[in-house]
Structures are given as structure tokens and as C-alpha cells.
Image 1 (cartoon, protein in one colour):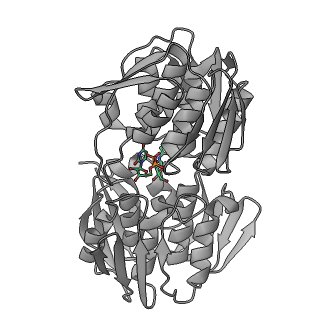
Image 2 (image 1 turned 135 degrees about the horizontal axis):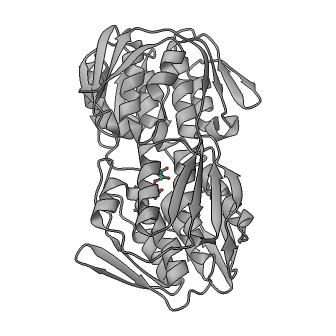
Image 3 (image 1 turned 45 degrees about the vertical axis):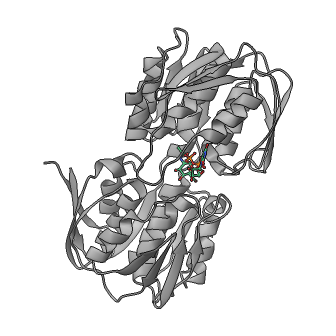
Length: 417
Ligand code: UD1
């Protein structure tokens, strides 16, 4: 499947952000901890969400879509191993590790392999689970975790990993006593997970700060309507698109604070906005200026928006240095952007971008989810046609991206071949 974009485009109008992929995946995993039925609202129709529903199905937890809600029923839940196939389809499948260990006292999952943005081990998840009392064996590509009883402990993460924080919050929910996670990830999705779990009867506080405290409880009951937060990465993508190609674009259903680090950088580059409640109006721009960026855990500049900002900087005046500190191999878009006329060079963990006046369309391949979205933005502002192959990567994390941009007046089409 490919996207064909005829450019350059000028975007105008309103675009609505869907629910957060990275919030809904751990929340669906957390529904495994809940007795009865759970209803999660505002769920985006994404490939990754379908994979997580597949994992739940595999465990005999029934998930049913109703409009933009998913209902999960765990009445028939059974422990099964999470196979290599499920793990390969989506790394976030490893988020069931904590909940299954908490619920069944044992779990066997396939070792998540490398992926195309870096090696991404789960050693921090396992280290934390061991501190809670789990015995963990890693053998022939599988991880086996067992604990007759989990006991609250003090865990200090070596790095504020999002997935490790979430897995440990879920594992600790039924542990006896209090668990303290220090140097926890502070992403808004962690706060959403805390809110979901607390509505289900958990006793968690501190999410959004570096210390999270979990007092163990005996059971959870599925909340009947938790609405997930808007997707700050999708929202940020539209804000960058508007800054690049907007006449006047209003991005709706966005929490401005969640994209604060992006807005700060864009402001530094000369972009003007108006914040109007849960919408951001991106005003018509003069020529943007080069800025330097360093990705960091929240509230630093998000690594997921780094490829999108690289596109913005390819046409900004001057030279920018973008440094990636979270993942080791996240500049796959650089080569494709060069093919579109960008002056961009990778040097170790940085890219050096010299702004050019105009990009030009080319035949490119989406190397991963966010790099794929970056190529869409590049296609929107390029002269002539851009063809983007491997759209499947983009579908993992963006709901109806081409329809949303068509709504803003862009000439973008999906071609099924
Ligand atoms: C989540 C997001 C992803 C985002 C990332 C960083 C989901 C489903 N995905 O991924 O979109 O890019 O946060 O904001 O929410 N690490 C270890 N050992 C571990 C765990 C992580 O070394 O046990 C390293 C990773 O290899 C990586 C860094 O820590 O270099 C960040 O990873 P982490 O915060 O765990 O990201 P994910 O939860 O996988």
C-alpha cells in the first residue's frame, strides 16, 4: 500500500486528534487485571490497537468494538504464553507481562527482539519485577516469570522507561504493602494509566512525577467508561504540518500542555499560535528559523516527534542540530529526506540539517511509524508528486491520516496495489 501526494499543498481548516495510542495500549493490558467488564472510550482504530485486542483474545479475554469504545470482558480469561508471533507484531505486547504475573503468579512471553529504531531491551522491566519478588528465567528466546506472592518494594529505574514504569505499576497493583517506583517516566500516558487503574479500585499516586507509590489492593473492577487522553504525538504531527504548510489550521482535541516542549521549539523557530482551550490555532508563518533539538524523556522534547521536526527544519533558514538521546537508531528518515532534496547528514547520534528553499517529490519508503509520518509532511510541502511505500507502518499509529489531511485541502491519496 502506498500514499501519493501532489504538492506543494497549503492546508486550511480544522483537524481533530484521535485518542492516544500509547495510552490505550497499556490501559487495554491493564483491563486484564480487572474483574467483570471494562469499557474504554475514545479508542483510535489503529493496527497496534487491533494487535493488542488480538493478544487479549489469545488470553480468552473478549474485546468488542462499539463505535469508538472497546469493551473487554475477562470472565473467561486463561493464562497462555505470549508467542513470538504476537511479540513480533508489536513490541508493546510485552505490557501484558506485569498484569499476567499479578493475576496468575506466572507468565511466559517471547523475548522482544530488536526493532528498527534500536535494540529496545526490557531489562528494566525484569529488574523491577525481580525486586517485587518474581523469579525470572530467560531461556531459548522466552522469558518466564513466576511469583507465588508479589511484595511491595522500592524500585529505582536506571532510566525513566515508559514501558517499564507501566509494567511495574500494573504488576504492583496486587502486591502486598507499598511499592515505590523512583525515577519513573512522567509521560501523560502514565497519568492516564494511573487514572484508569484508580477508577478500577487501585491505590496509586504520583504518576506524572518521578515517584509513583502503589498500595496493593485485593481486586480491581473494570471501570465502565474511561476516555483515553488525546494523542499528543498525533496532535504534535498536525501542529508541525500546520507550521509547515498551513494558511490557518486549527488542531482540535489536543491538550496544549502535553505538546508544550514542541510548542516551545516551534515558537523559538518563529511560529505563532493561539491556544484556545483544547485547540491550537497555528497562524500563518513567516520563514521559519533553524533551532537545535535534543530528545529527552517527558517533559523534554519527545523522541516520537523528532522525525517530524527534522522535516520542519529541512526548510528552516540556517543550520540545525538534532540530537537523539532516547533511541540509538532513529534517523532512518534522513536518507529518504535527502532523496527529496533535503540537506541532512547523520553524525553519530545527531543530524545536521541545513535549510533549503524547497523539497521536491520522490519515491520513498516509510522505514517506521514516525519516520513514515515525517515523509507525509515532507510530501505535503514538496513540489511535484511524492510516493510513500510501506504505509502499513503509518497505519500502526495514525487513524485516517490521509482523510484528515484531505479535509485540510491536501492532495493525498491511498493507492492499494
Ligand atoms: C514508549 C512509546 C514510544 C516512545 C517511547 C519513548 C508506547 C507503546 N511506546 O516506548 O512510542 O518512543 O516510549 O518515549 O508507549 N530501555 C532499556 N531497557 C528497558 C526499557 C527501555 O534499555 O528495560 C531503553 C530503550 O531501549 C530505549 C529507552 O530505554 O532506548 C526508552 O524506552 P522506553 O521509555 O521503555 O520506551 P517504550 O516504552 O518502549
